[in-house]
Image 1 (tube, rainbow, N blue to C red):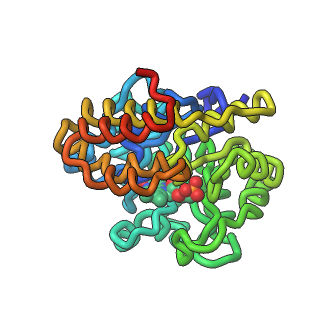
Image 2 (cartoon, rainbow, N blue to C red; image 1 turned 60 degrees about the vertical axis):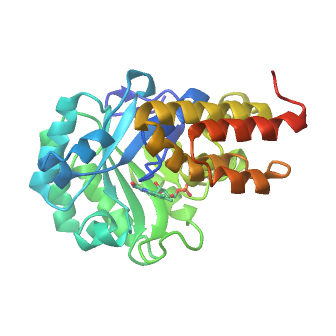
Length: 326
Ligand SMILES: Cc1cc2nc3c(=O)[nH]c(=O)nc-3n(C[C@H](O)[C@H](O)[C@H](O)COP(=O)(O)O)c2cc1C
């Protein structure tokens, strides 16, 4: 069984941190389907320092989603260390993760996220300061680097391992690539060969078969899934089933509709009706992608004015399929 420091990981799948997406309700949905570890949205170390209400909200958690990895971003060793100590004190995190991969301008401009991959000295100072500040399992999430060589990833990974980091997740695209082109899984395999700590492979897993291919090509210890979980929250549990039993079930449309209803319920309870229905406009449409005649319902879901309307649309879409339980 994979261990990150002293934390036993019961499974092989991590839900990737996705800013604006992996809030508590979405994490609960994916966890209820089945997965080993869920990750928070990225949290600003400075935001914690200034005790911003929004930042603290990002770290709201519940016992039933644990283990939870809380991801921090920032560029100053001292504020990162303070943030890590704060997160440990809050008692919500089982893992602290540091973001070395975000390529969004706002983050890179502060010298945080992937900008750190070209600053090995600052990166090392951050890692050593954070390691000193917390006893929690510590992970980092990196890209391949600035250029195609993957050299920055290997340099940083070695620095991290020496500084006491307990596992590394890699999304093997370069900073310049953003989300374009393909993730270069060779870098996952090479990192796995180089390091003694666990390596979590990430990037372009859209199906169970992709995950199986990543395991066999790279020998990674676990896989991390981001975008594909947004339209299929069952994907991580399907990967777990495949790893354990060699087979997995494809959810029926009925199962998908029940999950959509569950997401509505979780969103409304957490965000309140007004906020929830606006956010759900985009989220729900992802789930029906690929189902027969989905384009009309996707269009209508994008225009809902209440969460009740979303429920009505789901029922109306489901009934002609002859699968409505009522
Ligand atoms: C909308 C969105 C938000 C993201 N937010 C974060 C983040 O907060 N922290 C992070 O480390 N990576 C973030 N990522 C990158 C993902 O965690 C992941 O590395 C990337 O999407 C590749 O994995 P995938 O092909 O499974 O989606 C984000 C990606 C997307 C699409």
